[in-house]
Amino acid sequence: MPLSEQPAARPRTPNERETPPESGTSPVTFTIVAAATAPVRGGVGILRLSGPASLPVSRALALDVPHTPAPRHAYLTNLSDRTGAPLDQGLFIYFQEPQSYTGEDVVELQTHGSPRLLEVLQRELLLDARVRLADPGEFTKRAFLNGRLDLAQAEAVADLVAAESEAALRAAAQQVSGELSRRLVQIREPLIVLRAEIEGLLNFPAETEDEEVDLESTLRDSLERAKSLLADADRGRLVRRGSRVALVGPVNAGKSTLFNRLLGENRALVDADPGTTRDIVESRFELQGLAVTLLDTAGLRHQPGRLEALGIERTREAASSSDLVILVIPPEASQPDVLKWSHELGVTSPLRVHSKSDLSQDRSAKERYVSGLTGEGVDELRRTLVSTLMGSSVPGAVLLTSERHVEALHRFAAHLERALSAVHASTLEVVSGELAIALDTLGEVLGENASQDVLDAIFRRFCIGK
Image (cartoon, rainbow, N blue to C red):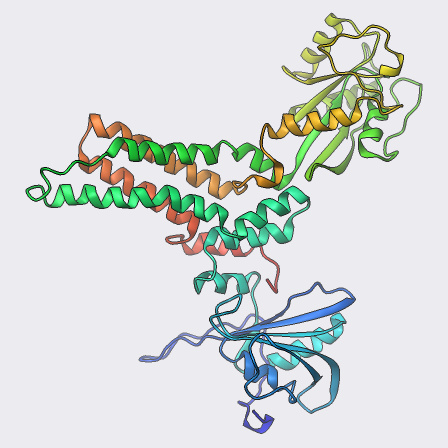
């Protein structure tokens, strides 16, 4: 479309939104635009548009692209401003609705990776009255509203972008692919059929008096499937936010040396003088894809000095807030010493590790021995950390990582348990009512009946451009 045929241009404010429709008209659906790449210099910068005017608006800056471009075809084009002054040479890709990420017409302008260039191109596009700046997460929100993703998948997109470990990335990728949604649908479908059968019994008793409905086995099977998902809830939290592991023990037990060996770098100061560590030293690393924040703490000592006492108090706080506590035991320690240290820290079942194995003479087959100095036993300790934190679960295979999903599934299971109890102790009306609430709860996860407040809270987590 020639520039002379474009709608009259006017400046727009980023916060301007769809206007209420006049009587008898449909709501205005604005085309949205935002940079899909970070505002830093790089090899490629991408500007994305979505909405009914994506194609004509973007073609105003890429006049050598055909009037009806082939969908999903990359056109090398000269990009210019509205006066025709050249800005860059890049790629123009058109995704025709509904076969696009958002389900709407989408255009991507792929340019050289200059943040200032993207700003100029975006400013030119925003001069069109049909275009506004996208809200955070609005591309994914439109994908959800247009049925391209359910809400669980949409949430996982934000988790995928924010993933700080391989395990978190793989778990989010599974959810984006719809694996969690498929599991929830498998739980829900038999219950939908069951509720229809119950309603038939209630509403048409004469016609259905000879029918038998297996209430208990269907309810129990769905409940067990839900509990199977919930069994991974604690591990899912670790995958999403990472775990905290604290090294604790007496002074000069070799905690700092072991800390450095586990990290693979000299992060903590090491000295033969006891009490070198007087504050918490922490560093983040990955174990089999799982993000771990490792804490080196002040050593325990009888009658510590004032500064050491402050450090020991922080050691107690670190132990109480960690997902796993490793008690580092020096070779000269006795069993009463070990019990005293555990009691002093308030830790009932720490992972016990005997340090300085290069100096140990007598060893028990039941104990773990490591040497931060030589590395003996450290690889085995790493494997033990992952198995202790994750159990038999593979970190990247955990499906339930969202607190919202966990809370909803707990409510779902509670209503199914009430329905099961009502099978023998109450009436079909009670069973049907509890079942209806349980189904609504699963609908919240998938987004079928999520409130606007929930949707707003979810999509606020996203960055602009996604």
